[in-house]
Length: 456
Ligand code: SF4
Ligand code: FES
Image (cartoon, rainbow, N blue to C red; front, side):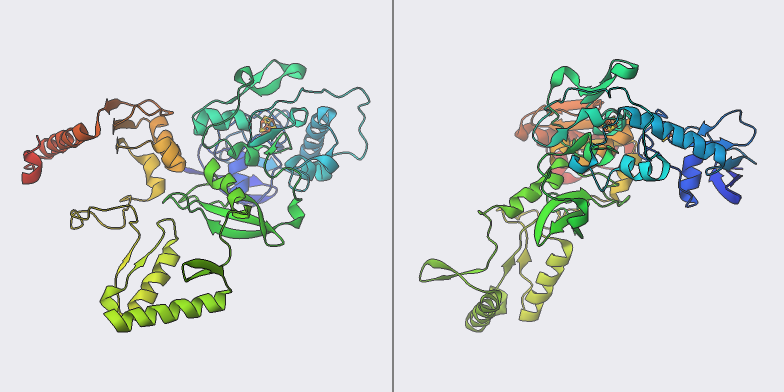
């Protein structure tokens, strides 16, 4: 039997064997307070905020590190559990500064929220609080390490998912500090995710810092335009101005992560150099106009071109970073005009392999499936920089035992072991790929296609 049944707060809950209590309670909609636990990271069990009462256990147990068992009786809100949770909160607040009014995390801080439910009005601690010298770790992440509660989420993210251990813990007990090695800057391609992971105001967004409060922002769902991954994100807007971008959870695409380029490039939206109003070129000069005039001008121009040259002579070139919905609408518009000339390949000049190559490249499988692959061959790809979220999936696959091989023109840096690497010039890559095709054909017992055998 793969499932067990336990009782949580008087309610029957079914969980998979090996799951932790907190996973079972989350699935059942029963909230257990937590700081260090995160469903995508390994269990550290160092904050103790998730202590719950388990019948027959001599003392409260951490829900994030206690596996479920058949017949287990768990109480998350009993007097014993509440007392333990409140005790942990009191310990956390001994050193955490009560500077919420000037903290950028104020209003979206897990510690602030939980302190309302589990904290005391007045601290019993009168001694001086610990102070940690602040660090400058680069242009994207602001630090206020006196606020750190040592949950190690940022450390585990780098080690387990980001693939670059940029943060680490130094010292012990009262003297422990989370910091970068030799005070280096943090500059990996997924570094901004620690801002979301940090449950307090120790790590916050530097570009966003002190510009707005969370309750002033409206959230607008959107999709990242930077690569074909299409990471789901929320643009936080104040009075029509994009103030920041945060990930929108979608397990099938980006899980709960964003690449730094998706997260921070919103700053370009607000630059003066950006074209925000339509323009019409008259007599060789660009003139600003309103949308209605621009639409009518475009419609008249299209009508004129169609009647003068025929619909087949009219075509539309779309930016390759547009969304699928925008492509769909453009295609619909062009078909209504009688033309099917729509393309997004703005930098391609040779179309001789159109028959063999689909015009819309497709991964061939779901993004989430990448982390379940056993073997991967990357060709001409600096995946870590080009598509950091796909690289994250491959890194997960490698951690489960997958082999990744590369054929590249440059010896790019990867953040997981590469099983086989061939770095060669572009011309020789063709021959190398033909060699791979030959090996695959031999393994499958099929003949090598004619065009390829000439290369081998
Ligand atoms: S900096 Fe934030 S995420 Fe990192 S250990 Fe401290 S509290 Fe946790
Ligand atoms: S959430 Fe369980 S110990 Fe931190």
